[in-house]
Length: 96
Image 1 (spheres, helix red, strand yellow):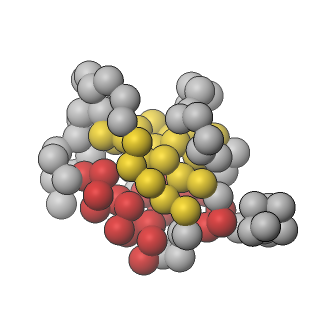
Image 2: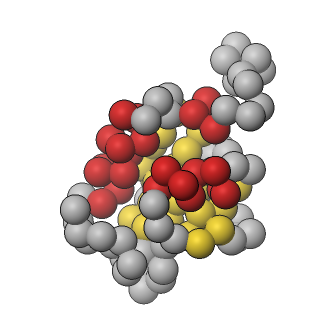
C-alpha cells in the first residue's frame, strides 16, 4: 500500500539497493545504517559480482540520494532488479 500512496518527491520511501563493488569491508552495512538514520525506510544490501569501480548511483532519485550518500557519481547504468535507486560502492568509498 505504501508503494502506491507514497510521496513521489520524498526519496526516503523509495527502494534503495546498496551493493559493495570494491569498497572497504562493511561499507554497505554502514551506508544502510546511515540511510535508515536519515529516515529511509526500504534499504537493503544486494550482491553483484565484485570488481574495481568507482561509486555510482542510478535510478529515479539518484541526484537526491547522492546528497545523502556523500560521494559518487550519478549514472544511467541499470540498477538492481526491484530497486528504485541502486548505490554501487566502489574504490572511492571512505573506510569509515
